Image (cartoon, rainbow, N blue to C red):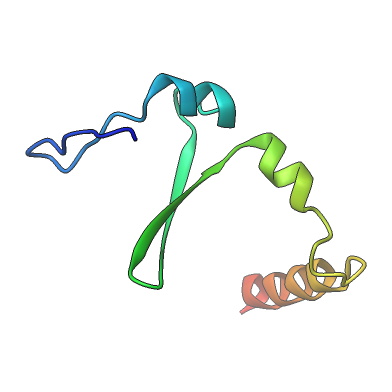
Length: 76
């Protein structure tokens, strides 16, 4: 088990073995999710993004809809 200490600023150090395993580097964004009384951390890396492209199965329709809506907003 890896234990870390929270600083007065609410910061923690992610142990090196996890940073290496999950590709966490300087500037990597981490998403926090609360689920079933637990906090889960998800690094947002290029690999994670690449692995999840198309997971919604919309074949690009969601992106097209989003782009249309943004165009309408810009015209307002």
